Amino acid sequence: MNTVEIEDVLTVAASWARAGERVALATVTQTWGSSPRPAGSQMAITSSGKMAGSVSGGCIEGAVAEAGLKTIETGIPAELQFGVTNERAWEVGLACGGQVRVFVERLG
Amino acid sequence: MTPALLSALLAAREAKKPVVLATRLPDGAQTLLPDDRSGSDPVRSAALAALADDATREVAVGSERWLFQPYNPPLRLVVVGAVHIAQALVALAPALGFAATVVDPRRSFATPERFPGIALSDAWPDEAMATLGPDSRTAVVTLTHDPKLDDPALDRALRSEAFYVGALGSRKTHAARLDRFRALGHGEAALARIHGPIGLAIGAVTAPEIALSVVAQIVAVRRRAVAA
View 1: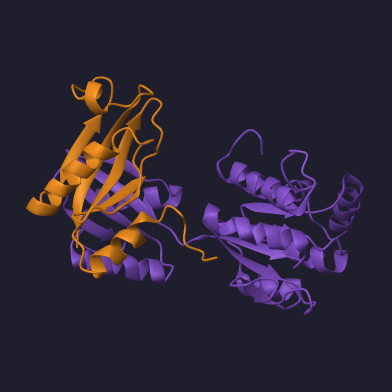
View 2: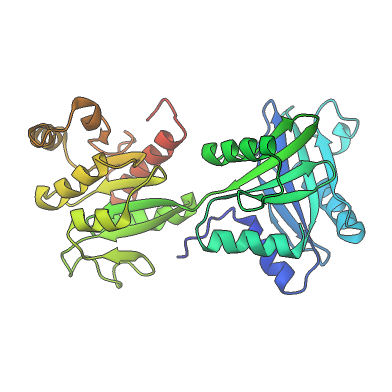
């Protein structure tokens, strides 16, 4: 057994980048109310469709991955907000009623 | 994150050097502190506060918003006594983010066959503890049941900043242990740091269950839960 934390998304993302993948990294920056994952939680995605980690209980990962693919193309970071007050809530909101803000950047 | 910054961040983690990745929101301008001298003083001090708290957070610095992501070296678990419970304990440790070291001068106990991939020390526990230097990110657990081995380790642990100190043994064993430590000159505040009997009360019977109760107690202490 190794000593790498299960949640060490950065290491996984960096290894993907080293292998020539195009990678975006999403990080939870703030949460309000009952959100499932704390600030600092990360998710990495690649243009080839790989995914590691999580930024919620699975409610917003799809939308975050979509934003990640865009950031991989443009290089422009994005800040996303999800929650009941958000218009997109009916599509990809948090069932728990919390709010979460996520920063998406291109890695490498 | 630029390739240069990613390399610097990975190198710092490899060297077990505490750093903070500071990201300005929403434009994503980044710097790695405390090494990068370009960060302004208010950004720097807010970043170092996040590092000390080991907490990722967004902070308003003047008119700017900054995200601080601390990367501290791994938490450490020092286990004295290469016994059956230790085997179960070091199996759980990595998933919780702990790098484990097992200390036991009895060579037939601390073998790579019994502890594959785990750092082992066959030094006497007080010497091993002096070498390991437990800090505020270290938990120390004694499991030998033998005061000759447990006591020197606990003595060193109480003189360190270890955030968790736990000792296997019944209430009676623990009461006798506390008397020995009083005789050594340890005050009541220091003695209260020892969790004994060790572990949260989950009715643990088997070695893996006891290991789970110990790990749960370590997490509870680290997260300042009432259960601790």
